[in-house]
Length: 88
Image 1 (tube, rainbow, N blue to C red):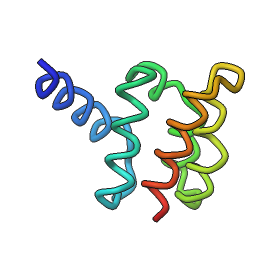
Image 2: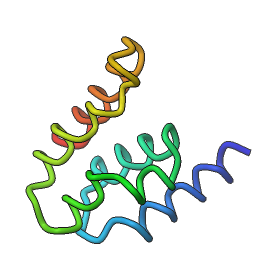
Image 3: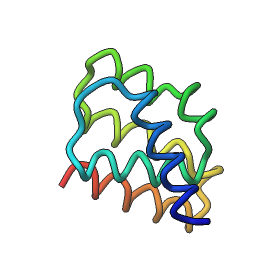
Image 4: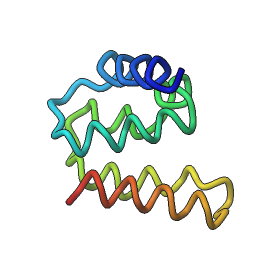
């Protein structure tokens, strides 16, 4: 079931994100999308910014941290890990 779900979220990222991504950037966005949902990605400022050509690293750093439900420690760690994966 997890593989099937992951494949679905991977395809959503492919459909929603326009720039060419590194494997780490793609994996970070899939992790994010798996957690918040593809509708949230579709409506996100992150998607708008990255698709408009802004620097990808800046988009990850500034936008992912907004998705921590008011700073819940577990979500802060998760978003930090996703950003680290994407930009390193």
